[in-house]
Amino acid sequence: MSDPAPLPLVNPLPPGGTHETDVIIVGAGPVGLFAAFELGLLDLKAHIIDVLDKPGGQCAELYPEKPIYDIPGLPVVSGQELTDRLLEQIKPFHPSFHFGEMVEQLHRLDDGRFKIVSELGTEITAPVVVLAAGGGSFVPRKPKLPDLEQYEGKSLFYAVRKMEQFRDKNIVIAGGGDSALDWVLNLHPIAKSITLNHRRDDFRAAPHSVAKMRELVAAGKLRLDISDIKALKGADGQLSHVVVENKADGRYEIEADTLLAFYGLTMKLGPIANFGINMNENLIPVDVATFQTSEAGIFAIGDINTYPGKLKLILCGFHEGALMAQAAFKIARPGQRLVFLYTTSSSDLQKKLGVA
Ligand SMILES: Cc1cc2nc3c(=O)[nH]c(=O)nc-3n(C[C@H](O)[C@H](O)[C@H](O)COP(=O)(O)OP(=O)(O)OC[C@H]3O[C@@H](n4cnc5c(N)ncnc54)[C@H](O)[C@@H]3O)c2cc1C
Figure 1 (cartoon, rainbow, N blue to C red):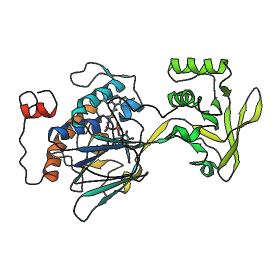
Figure 2 (cartoon, helix red, strand yellow; figure 1 turned 60 degrees about the vertical axis):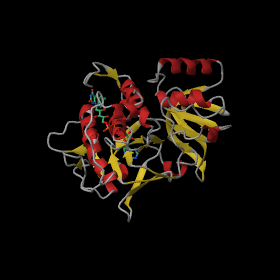
Figure 3 (cartoon, rainbow, N blue to C red; figure 1 turned 120 degrees about the vertical axis):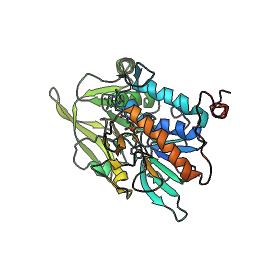
Figure 4 (tube, helix red, strand yellow; figure 1 turned 45 degrees about the vertical axis):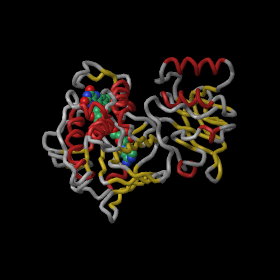
């Protein structure tokens, strides 16, 4: 079985390699996505990079099914639907996407441009960087177990980057949400064995995934284990057993060479704090005419920025993206004249949007 099909409207680039573009957008939340639209209207190309494996930021990760009632022109829209609509809207500009990659470094080059480097070695160079990093990067919640570090990245993982890595493995998948259940269902055809571990027999995941999981358990294709994980056993980072405990059976061991732990995500500012930009209590102060930070050429829009009167609302982030794009144009296209145009009446903009 091959890896899951690419998301609709998004064809992410593989990690690694070097890229050059007009604008690097760090963060594929709603604000980062809409920024690609405003930049696209001005003919500026963008690469968007996010540590999550999908676009949408908080909307897609924290509340995909919750209704939002304060997006102008959309009386009610779910977090996921808003994300999908934004992807549809920016499609004419073909932004390049990089997912599952934390931006770890930001350097200014001798020629004045910037280079960002991701944890997976992707390098992107551009004259403008837009930080649309929200409350920071989503990082996995880790189980509180002794000696966790020795297994991390060797036989304990918090995400699946390549399904093939787990072929013929004896896997314990821990968690009760969508990630745990989705990976149980995706990996069971290629794994040697899968045990789904959760602390209670009640799952937050989508009901159809839970029903499928229960079918597999009933058919003997999957083991369901209701217990708390207490320790990991193994040597040199290679797991051999997961030690668990519950009231009925006491403490016992599950044989496993791989543990996939899906206990949800938390938000941490992460590497942005080390980018050399002025910060104020984990937020980035900006000039409200341009949304530029203390560093010329680096902008901050959306939840990550702060200024007098700031509201952490999606619609405010959209406004910030529009003004940022005007200022970014002057840096990316020095000497070129910027003409203010309406999408309703400009045939030039309509051509770019593919509607004329
Ligand atoms: C439960 C809930 C309900 C909400 N309801 C509403 C509402 O009704 N209306 C409203 O307007 N707002 C609402 N909000 C707030 C709204 O979701 C945020 O204002 C919005 O998501 C901010 O968008 P953003 O693009 O700035 O940041 P985010 O959505 O936080 O996206 C930032 C992205 O940047 C990525 N990132 C950060 N650092 C890095 C890095 N170093 N490398 C790579 N990627 C990185 C993150 O992974 C993330 O995907 C709600 C929030 C929550 C939690």
